[in-house]
Amino acid sequence: MQNLLLAAEVVVPLLVLLAVGALVRACGIVDAATLTRVNRLIVYVALPSKCLLSLSESDLSRLSESAPVMLFIAAGILLVFLAAELIVPRLCSVPARRGVLVQALTRGNDAVFGYAVASSLLPALELQQYLLSMAVSTPLFNTLGVLTLELNRGDRVRFWPLVKKVATNPLSLGCIAGLLLNVLGVRLPRVLASPLQSLSELTTPLAFIVLGSQLRFSSLYSNRKALAALSFAKLALVPAIVLAVAMLLGFSGARLVCIFAIFTAPVALASFPLACEYGGDEHLAGELVAVTSVLAIVTVFFFIFTMKQIGGF
Image 1 (cartoon, one colour):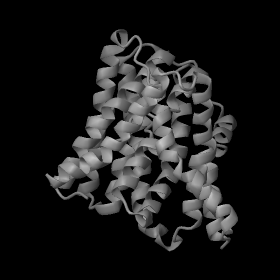
Image 2 (image 1 turned 30 degrees about the vertical axis):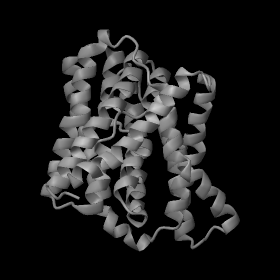
Image 3 (image 1 turned 30 degrees about the horizontal axis):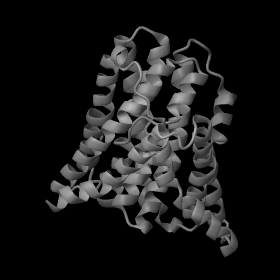
Image 4 (image 1 turned 90 degrees about the vertical axis):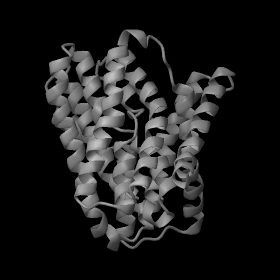
């Protein structure tokens, strides 16, 4: 019963925030343009502030402790991507849909959903391990997302634009800036650290309210088979395999939570605008975000309860 309550304590607040977002949209409190700007505020200001502040104040002597989990996460993401690139083309013949499906299988919402789960399960000191893990997962997700959409629309992959897109990602910049300040021994004065802290505290509640307001379920019926298959693979099959392998390799505690939070996350919000930009099936991309974001509330609850029962963390 205690493990059941703990799982509920992690998941129910996220569900409430999603419901608040849906209510905000339904009541017309803010319009779509405002929500888009708020989402950009989260991506370009709040999340990078959180990454910068936490990594600038983290104990880098513990980086060696995080190295195994960072390597595991990188290897896991790459293997999922390669498996998706091998399997999806055999099941889907439409290029515009193939890239969207591969991206959805590979790219998780580590920055919003994953962070919220990790922050609920980890103390503040251990949360730095998750931010270091994000320093690996975020650029990988961005790179592989662009790569698969380029490959599946038939264009030649342009190397330098791809590098530029990854290097200038605001989350990557926040992580790099935080690590540089830490390595150089620069401590932010309170007049700067305090507003950064305030901005970073906005991240989870604001991001989930915006996510709830952006969920759309139009034309689900026509894509029902793809949505069902990918949701099962993304939210159940892949996490189960990854977590089983991680536990067999001896990962536990905070390290296992970092792996858990990244691989149980639903399809990343950023996958939708990227699909639009690169000529992917935008309707399928949006529905994958919406459906997996809602279903992840259930699957994460189940996984947390199961992991607690078997002593995983």
